[in-house]
Image (cartoon, rainbow, N blue to C red):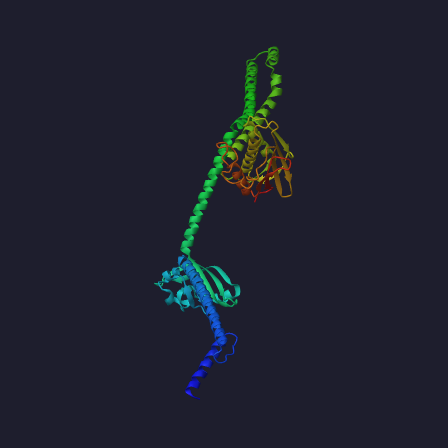
Length: 457
């Protein structure tokens, strides 16, 4: 074959190979259509190549962004993070651990976990891989890490299994926080919690004093009746004592019998003898009533936690009703729909305060209504007693019903309510092992339900 023929043959081979990229176009001589088809196919291939290149660059950019994001997250972590393979060889560690170990990422890669933990943690570390194969996660494991100078630091470690895209176990991830930091955080949290509890106790006491201030007139009236009764009886007993003393002196002086009989009639000694025991009994009853009221006041205003005791909750409710009733001037009616006795073993003071708050709140709602009426009824099960306080006011707004037990929330005008009464009552009910709920009554008005166990835990 001549050199010219060889050149033509090479050209034809080249044209055939290029056209083969598309649909294997058959070429013959210098066929112009064949050349056009080849060029079109080359354009299509080139366009596909450009499109694939752009997609690849976009994916690479997204991958770089993801890597940069992950890197920024890892570098900002204050907890140490260590990634290992199934043999316990370190594949990656974040900046927090690099700083602790005084090493860079390249120096740590391939290092064994056994080398970075103290000997006292060696057994636990050697079993981590197998344990994570079985249970996938281990939380709050206390392990001792070594820093760059070989010093030991106790860490709380969370260890997790790591899987690839096909779900195969490929290694473990350890995230840990220095226990010194955790203990400081727990201490700060405990102090904040204690401060909150102290503040809450101060709020409870302040609300008690506020409620007591509103109830002073009612309490004074409650005290005035038995004290007046005691004073009246004591004045009568003093007069009786003077007469008896005069009669006894006459007997001692030898007065004759006729005069003594007359004196006995004039001084009404026989009536005194008959009347003196009822007077003494009445005086004792009045004194006991005063003592009870004083005890109720002490329970109501005390900041100390009471011990549990058995008591009749109906009497506590009626006492609260008397106090609240006497502290307001508006006309209203309390309807007690409950038995004479409902026995409860709990702390009387908090129960009394809850009822005072609920009744005072109900009175405030119906203040100014001509037909103001508040019904207090009870329900009893084997384990609980529920007290329902129902008013015939406008009810609770839908926008307020979810906030009604929140602190400082009130629908009253500025200066007429602290917004703490219901909040404190809610907390007291929980402390007693019960609960306080609110809703709109089917017959109109609002209904508050205090449910208490017959014996508090």
